[in-house]
Image: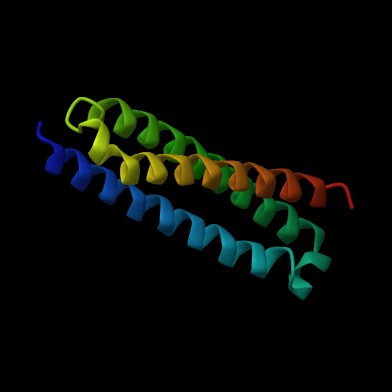
Length: 111
């Protein structure tokens, strides 16, 4: 597997993560910030779906980033790796933000 194949595979996984994040943000707007949150059953089911989707997104993001960083490191020389390392760090920061969002949704269960 060459570096362009690894990058293409990582780009596809990033698209998948972006789609899952977008869907979860739309569901957060619908089930937490709209008047639907007054209905306990709909709100609870929506929050569970949001949690499952956010945990799935965070898990995939960490898994794909670990795989990418391990696979790409053998193809890039030190001078070429700065952009790749920045992308990897941003991916981990995004995972951190997803974790904070998961905690926020969990906290909304107890309000």
